[in-house]
Amino acid sequence: EAGVTQFPSHSVIEKGQTVTLRCDPISGHDNLYWYRRVMGKEIKFLLHFVKESKQDESGMPNNRFLAERTGGTYSTLKVQPAELEDSGVYFCASSPEGDNEQFFGPGTRLTVL
Amino acid sequence: AQSVTQLDSQVPVFEEAPVELRCNYSSSVSVYLFWYVQYPNQGLQLLLKYLSGSTLVESINGFEAEFNKSQTSFHLRKPSVHISDTAEYFCAVSELPYYGGATNKLIFGTGTLLAVQP
Image (cartoon, rainbow over all chains, first blue to last red; front, side, top):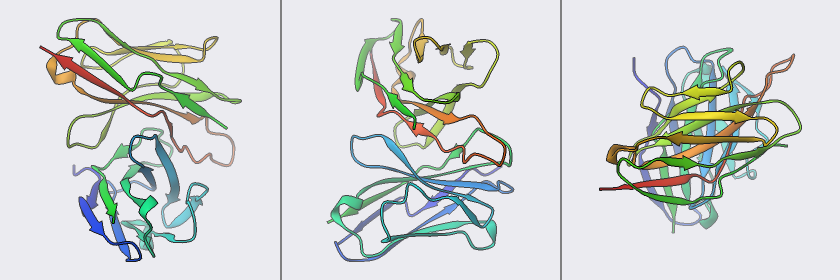
């Protein structure tokens, strides 16, 4: 069984540009989570999808971040326009319905110059 | 709101020595407790979890953690570490589900880098 995959693994962009991160959860997992780790700090929750619906987006930092999960399969996280403070590692995780164990992807390292 | 404190950012230890990674949490509601590990160049992996029942939980690679409700702690221990245990360890909590469905989002500590030296 394939694990959670994320693309790209690294992205380097300039301030003001747009970047889109992609997450493919484990097949059949209804729950999909996005987290972010800014350098040296804790991993912070961004949002949670149940299938295609946003269950909780309380962790989204501002309206420059837009997450989608069309069809309840893969998800994208777009940052537009990117700012320096958006740099960090973005993790995606998924879990089956009713299960509290989240399976994490390898993360996307975003660097905004 | 919940919070997790991992006071030790780095723990250097010699191979075959015992180790304890500390984790304390704060929450006004009951929580589930987790330890995740991130090996170099890999994603986060669940190491062990406490949901209910016995307060001592174990992983398949020799780690154990004990839930102490009175001290709000969930420290991770291993009696004898290996070079391959070198990794960053994250303690995390999530709220118990309630009727209507909690988000089960994880609240993480800042991580502890375990550096095992030969």
